[in-house]
Length: 379
Ligand code: MG
Image (cartoon, rainbow, N blue to C red; front, side, top):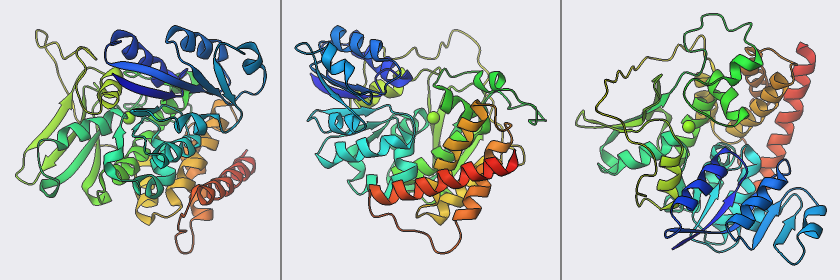
């Protein structure tokens, strides 16, 4: 029986993780949950359904009073970080955004393993996270889970390059992106995900973040990480070895595969996700990415190569720009423009070395303020 802690339990990853637990009561037991403040009724319902003794929420006050004597509640801004330090077999971090970094570091700091769906932990604080050792992180991002699985078929010094697949998002074949609406950007063709990740998929910013994520997770130079558009989202990523052989991991798009694989620490969970149906015909396309229409990839790579605080600036500026787009303050194509302008404004001089979470927070604060200023100037 593996004891698991889920951070971000009311989000897309958290909800699917609990469905896996419900389907495998002999394998997994949830011992703690944490979520933000926007769906407390669901958090409480989850805790009761799974018999969880302790929950955390960033909302303050009322919930702890309501549940007094039933469930222990840790509340306030550090709740997820505290929940992450509960000793368990694995902490699933399904938080969206770089606020997930603190909980990731806290979990690792007490010796917990982390099933990491929060890619921003690695983008904003990759050196800090990986200092705990590669064997402590199991990726949940579908592409990185695929790479993790593909790596098993060769030795590390036999890897020539890794190829991340990208669905291309809803605008893969759209020439003019200047009049994209929010509704169009939120309509992802193959994956059902949270709103931020969905917008990031439409700009391909998500793939940019994932290139940086792969660099830290697998200790690969950027020259060995590329990305290709694969509209069907069935091949989740590939590893090319020095003998010319390429190993791919394939399954119809469904996050339950990578979530279950990570919760099981690499042990495969029976029927975690539906397999490819070979009684039907399939066509799998692979198309190079047009970097003129999708400048996010090259920008991410540049920030990643510069290292230091640049990836954190890149990510924080994007979070601000996405929020501005969702609120109708900027157009779709301005998202990457704003990020680029922020990186240029703050990225000069020698790269900043990140020593701790405080350094990351300071860099992100500067980036958020500068991105907001740039948005104000462009309106
Ligand atoms: Mg992904």
